[in-house]
Length: 583
Image (cartoon, rainbow, N blue to C red; front, top):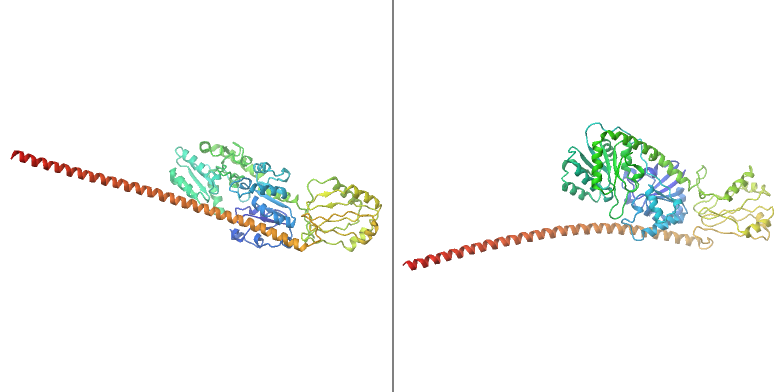
């Protein structure tokens, strides 16, 4: 069984566990960058490894019999490029949403993605929308395979729509802008007057939690709104089963961040909950408007409010929607089928695994085989039962020598001429030159030994008998190494240099990630400080205004007292004057 090394952002139940651990006919190693990304300890086993603890990629690959690399994010694909070049393994990169945008990406991200397009073998976007974005960035279309995320239909069983009069609206997703929770809350507020018994529940956590709670108070949603930060998976399924309507108000965020296709939408459709969503990203690939559900323009409060009202008013249509939705999931988004599709995509890159190949992996040739390959197959059939010696290629650069029996069988071929093929590290074949063909004719009936090329560039020398048969005819020999250099000098130094470069590159990317995390934390702290400072300034201004008002009031009171005193003095003076006049 082939083994795939998967590099994932973190180990937790939301991070594509099935696409790592349940691919048929493929074993796995679950890799994360550092131990701190091991989030859910219930998923920890002997197959969870850490990239920062690997010092010799070649030795690691040989020890674990790895055939393929799979990065589950665009940036992780970049991170694996030095590992790929050191081991010459094919690299697959999954693209899931934000990694197909420039949202909050480091400087040079697009250039690095273009380098990944050039060196990586396959890219698995989770919808055609993201595939189109990759092509627009310059990814060769022939390297792209759309791989939808699947739903475990054994866990999400279909149930008929609720017949009673409940009006529970549910949305599930991280509390980030692209999920559109704020749009849904405003739309819900618009219909509350017509549906006073309706409720809205949002399940998720994230950076906008404070804003969501503040918005709920601002909209006076009261007890009709609930925000549940985090629930175990079984309780989330229970909430979904009890919902009357599921809504995903996805939209493109201000920084350009986008969705692929929300898995929660697929799960709701599998369960049989009527769905409302937007025409954002890959969602129209899942839902056809007014067939499997209702779609509205993204970031549009009024249209979403109308859709909620329509769905709550027309309960008799729910079953029509949900039956069509379940069929769509079974046909195109069944987890078992999608994992089988993933295995078939892997098969394009590695040869079918057979018993007895424990210590060697032969790379599969490219999809389009040339006429020379067909001729080789035809010639091979003419050998009948004569076995040809075969050299197995290992990732550590060592070769398996032909057995004595193979050498003996080779002698019996006599005049049977085998076509010679020179192999390059990318699996393509190089046709012999005209000079080679001319030299080949001079050999007459003498069989030319076939030269197999290994990843470290060493070749299998012709036997003494073959050398004697060649006489003075010089056969051009090409030594190939995956980095294009000759392997005959300073091999150990070059290997050490490559390992050093790879480690430096990994450390550089890790440092960039660390710097980015620190920058994000610093920005959050600055925002919080600014917010606190702003609040403090506002409070200070309010206090100053209060003090000024009190001062003004006291001044007015004092002036009033002075005025009264002056009036009293004037009155007394007038009385004294009148008294003197009367006297």
